[in-house]
Image (cartoon, rainbow, N blue to C red; front, top):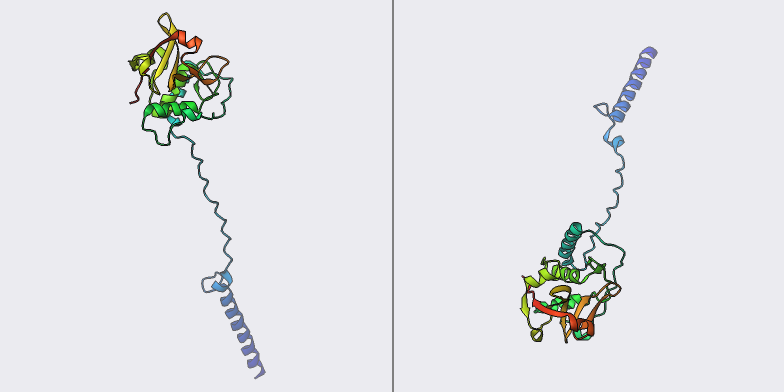
Length: 223
């Protein structure tokens, strides 16, 4: 009887071990669901998308493209810094809603008072006289106009000095050749990029130098 009892004991031990192994590894030889549970990795915190900074004036995109093309064709100039935005005199201020294209043109031109003169310049980093007008038509109206004064004059309709309106282009020169152009600002004055060493400014048409060299004026209505 003792021998039979010993066999029963060993058999019981084997069965117990087998059950324990089955509980540990599961029926398919893998860890049981209770043992296989692991902690899911912590998700990284999502950063909010960075918003692009809007441009101050979307209309300048058109002017930048026109200016870039002209500079590529004619060569770039350097050496000047962009002038700080000018304070527009009250007498030239334009209402918030301006229906007249000439008012819009003059109002924009006044923002560049103090910008340095730069030969060949067509950007707010520096303008020459016709480059200033060329830039403004692109920036305000999205329109490409001729780059040189004599070509600008051919594009517009001639107006008498007594019929000048804000936004008309005024031309100066001698012996039939245009050497300077500006934008009539009202009150018998015009805004223009002057000459080397002087910035964009407002000048009376009757000032000594320009009175003697005034040639004509044209109205170049934007399309």
